[in-house]
Image 1 (cartoon, one colour):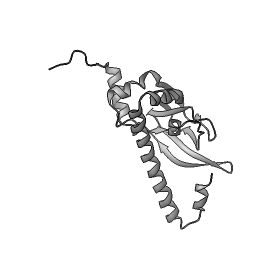
Image 2 (tube, rainbow, N blue to C red):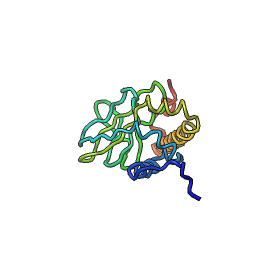
Image 3 (spheres, helix red, strand yellow):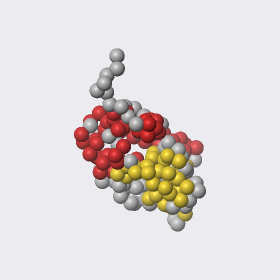
Image 4 (cartoon, rainbow, N blue to C red):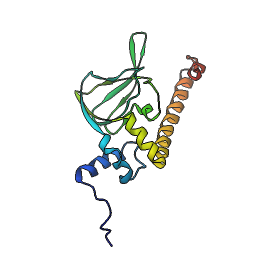
Length: 172
């Protein structure tokens, strides 16, 4: 039996839900839960070599790559050391899920152009405050990602045979 009171979504909304479901932070959310983010998703076009943000900037937004490639890098003694290349369906700047944080890396567009959704931190915080289940699902995905980053760091350390002082990564 069809429920005449069930919320229906437009084709554009369904396409956006399809996109969001491929982003690890959103993959466990229902359409109803994802719909809360739609009014706060702003699509921005970036050009090649355009900075999205710099290390030390306030973490004011979460970024979701619809199309394009973005380099995530650290600046070390006036040089950029690339950590990763992010592409379609990936999120970066995910520390915007946490209050009062600053960027820990730089992000620069590598492709000729990139289309990137941004979701302001203030809107994420409002959604989290009103929806504990969404907050729990997204912070679990966030923690899982950072657990993998930590495992990758330890593997790189072992491969480098301890040429860095790993203890420095645990300083305040």
